[in-house]
Amino acid sequence: DTRVRVAIMTALVSLLSHQATKAQPEVKAVHDCATLLITAVDSDPSMTVKEAAVFAMRYLYPQKFKAEHKDCVEALLDLLRKPTIPESLKQKILQTMEAITGQSFPITDIKRWDDWAKKAFGK
Image 1 (cartoon, one colour):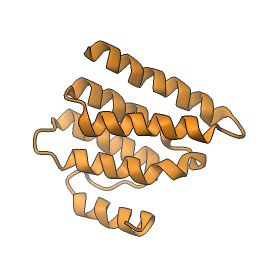
Image 2 (cartoon, rainbow, N blue to C red; image 1 turned 135 degrees about the horizontal axis):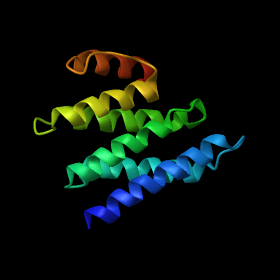
Image 3 (cartoon, helix red, strand yellow; image 1 turned 180 degrees about the horizontal axis):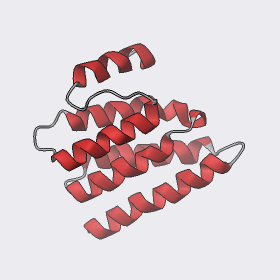
């Protein structure tokens, strides 16, 4: 059910917010959240769920979650390349990538995002 999957994405926001406040976040909990969000972005058939996952990924911005940044940015860039993505979701992807990376490039300049990711993550 789509509503349940959206609720899960929303719950992950709370979990990530809590981990961000801890001096020593639980690495496995953060990694598991990131994995669930990436899976939703990559595979969920519902745009509503994808949108909720993209929003939740913003909460992976802290530097202490840096280990998750590469995979999240790659998933977001892959989603951005899909021709069926609505403009509203593209804007949310951009906002999330800016939150995670601290970078600000035009949404239409995927090559610039790719070049930055290669330099930043060595992909």
